[in-house]
Amino acid sequence: MTFINYASREINCKIVYYGPGLCGKTTNIQWIFEQANPDKRGKLVSLATETDRTLFFDFLPLDMGTVKGFKVRFHLYTVPGQVFYDASRKLILRGCDGVIFVADSQRPRMEANIESIANLATNLKENGFDIRSIPYVLQLNKRDMPTAAPVEEMERLLRFRSEPTIEAVANQGTGVIETLKACARQILMELQRG
Amino acid sequence: MAKLDLVMFEEEYKVLQEIITRLQTESSSKVVFLVDKNGQQIAASGDVRSIDATSLASLTAGNVAATDGLAKLIGEKEFTLLFHEGEKDNLHISIVGKRGILVVIFDQSSSLALVRLRVKKSSRELQEIFDKVEQRAQNQAGETNFESPFSEITDEDIDRLFGD
Image (cartoon, rainbow over all chains, first blue to last red; front, side, top):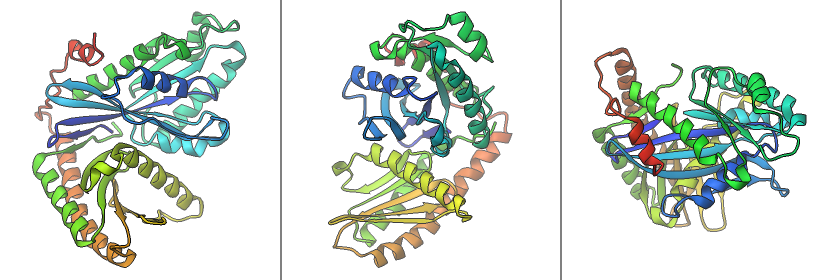
């Protein structure tokens, strides 16, 4: 749910990074945090366990600049990927404007990717969204891993609505901004349609 | 579409701001924030510069969402009030209508009873504004001639946001 404030001329959009445990959701937003101009970014809030696994969510506010005289601000959230945190994942999807699915390219994780997309569909539905129509991007992360499955195979397994698909190595920053941009484009184009 | 965007116009925002400011003065609190349930700050009053308001808004929404989940688990519709007591400062969090959260930060110069009393009154007023905003959104959703200021967004505008 985009928040448009005509008084302060601001648009706020919520983007959620989703995916199985250890696929690199937090790594994506950490990289964005490190690269962003300190004037344009807020604090990176991480609710994580002692072993740095996401417990509830990570949160990063980003000021993107202006469109048609309105300040555009993105609120980036990650969900906890581990299966047993499903209740928390559902809460974080509340009121989101777009979803980035971070898939782990390593072949042994393919089943976890498929399960996580199915879980995303269910949780979106419970929040009143349809996975087939919400702004959505598929990121194929960890392309540098030796056991990475071929892109064509991953697309066949994980792609379902001709969504933008971006190859990434999030810990090196490859594909991270492109992914965010692909999602932002869909959200803003949706605003255009009104 | 399942979602209705929250669109706030200047006159509504002004009234919200007035209510928040009055609440902050009358409850002798340090800061009052009005946040939406998705974690976005709507209005604030008091010594706001002393606090990272954006993080506060998102964490409050997370907190309320988690508490909501707990309520449903035990068969309650929702818990409308959260109170955190600190050594110096206290946090009073309450739900306003379907989409608002009111956060009041206060110290020993006020009291929980006073804050609760003032919050109750302000909540009713805030609720009226939220209802108005929602009503308008619903009316506009049915109108085909409502011109959004973003109807002219181009690919170039989006590229520019990313510095291309």
